[in-house]
Every structure is written in C-alpha cells, then in structure tokens.
Length: 169
Length: 169
Image (cartoon, rainbow over all chains, first blue to last red):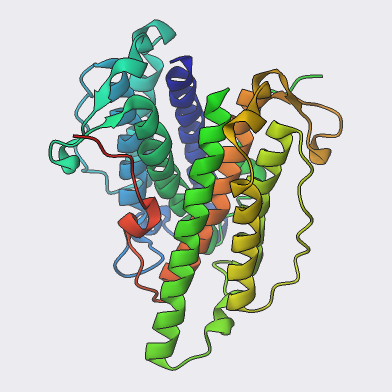
C-alpha cells in the first residue's frame, strides 16, 4: 500500500506547514508587541482544545498512523509543552519519527488490522483506518490550529495551508 | 484507482456529517430563541469565509474532485444560499451528484491529469491531486464550518465530526 507511505509524507508536509503558521504567529506577536506564548492557551470555544492540545493531537494523529501502519513503536512525546518554541520542538520531534520511515517500512501495510485502544478491541482495515479515521482526525486538529491563529490575527492564508504541490507541466 | 472512489465516498459521508452539525445548529437556535440564519454570516476572522462560503467551498471541493476523476461534468451550483435550509439543500445537491457515481465511473482515474483552472495549465497526477489538493482543501472548509458552529455554541463534538467508521470484530 504505497498510498500509506504517501499519506504519511503528506502529513509530514502539513506539519511543516503548521510550523510555518506558528512562525508567522511569532512574527505577528513581535510586531504587535505581545507575548506569543499567550497563543498557546488560545481556543475557539471554552470546551474545545487550546492551541497546544491541537498541535499535540495533530502530531499524535500522524505519529500513531505511521506506527500502526509500519508496526513500529511510536516514540513517547508527553504533552508538556507550554510555549511556542516547545510546540515547534514537538512538531520537529514528530517529523523526525515520520522522516525516519522509508517506503519499504510500509510493505504489507494493507494486510494490517488497526486497533487503537479507544476502539476497545474492534479494528479497521489499514485503508479504512487511514481514510475514515487518521486523515479526518489529523486535518481536524491541524485546521483548528490554523483557525485559532487566524482568529487571533495571524496573517495566514489558504496557500500557507496547502503548501507545496507536485506540479507538472 | 479504487482509492479515488473510496475518497469520494468519504467526502460524501463527511457532507452527511456536516448536514448533521447544521441540524444541531437549528436545534440550538430554537432552544436559545435566535434566528438560526444569523449563523450563515458567522465567521472566525473578518477576512475569512463565512459559514455559507465554507459550506459552498467544501461542497465544490468534493464535487470537482469527483468530476475531475471521472471525466464527468460537474453540475452547476451557483453560490446563492442565504439561509440554513438553503445550505442544507446545497449539501443535498452535491451529495446527489456524488451518489450518482459508481466505482466503474472511476476506472482509469489513475491515468488522468488534473488541471484545475487556477493552476493555469499546470497539472497534477490524479493521486497527487487527491492527496495534496482535494483532501486538504475539502477538510479545510468542512473543519472550519464545524469550528464556526462550535465557536457559536452549537453542541458538536469529535464523534459528530468523524461519523461512522467501518468497524470490524
């Protein structure tokens, strides 16, 4: 299932994009003379995750997808980040794991059953898991992080979101 | 590329979920005694699309992906919606097109070049287009619509977002 490898590479690129939006937030805070770390606690609704938890959950969604589909252990990343530089380091740590995986590591991924703990013993095929769970969940957290930044005046737009594309012609 | 058909089915399910969140918004408005149509103009930042445009763009992202990958003409859906019932009708119209497509319609999708007008003659392979453009763009608008509703007090949570999964065991 080369699709699994390519999906993880896409997650990696989106995490790179996310790091870029956070970089723009730092620039914005400097210009407006506020402490960028106040954004770590920002959220769009009182009972929704704040920026820190959105970043952590987005990273974990990518990390666990990569681990489930390769059979490799996910490195532990405790959710201890309280500053923007720490969130950027979390993204870098997650990307370090994703970048350590080669296409060959995903050989046989299509035959795997994926059974995250929160499914309590039930499972999905690898492709159903990617399409129905990992991809929507990953984008859920990454887009919400983007929206929190945008809502707080950070100058990010759609092309910052999409990032690079494999254009031809 | 059976993956293309399955991705379109996933988009269809997410649009069904989106319709459900909007249904919850109507219930919320009734309980709080406000006109639900005020939410059509709601947005998270002054220079970002409001709810109506997020729903329209999410629908179009799914519709054009399906059209590009099958070679069929996308039905025209002018962006005229100004009420919640009209937005739900727009979702239904988009889903009607998606539901009209069978797996056989996607035969040969992997050999297609996808060249949306905004790429000005450049193109992507069908699988690059889906992974790098259609999927992120679709989730961008659908998650933002979700966040607009959540930000305005609508009682939606993660499982409303994910919807049904093909669980086994």
